[in-house]
Image (cartoon, rainbow, N blue to C red):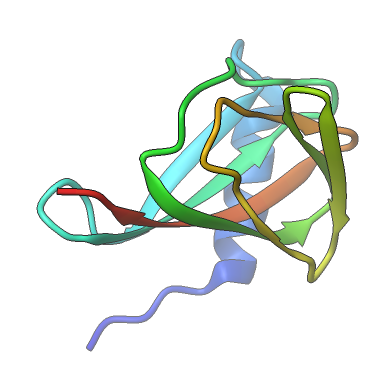
Length: 110
């Protein structure tokens, strides 16, 4: 069995996101396109907002660092350290209110 330190990954990818032109960095921790379950650490620089997109399946966000807002249409939900946020089955976007890192868990539809 392999293990990875989420604490170390948060630090590493938060630093990468802070200087990246996109304001973000991501690392797939588990799964990938060949699996039904995928977990990805996403770090975002404060103020960055990745493009709005559809959900690829059932999904949640766990806030590992910082403060984020999950926006879907007129609905807006904020999360901070330790919060678990279900992702709606609708177009949505994630905003970094401050430098942040989240663990995205997706059960991919095949």
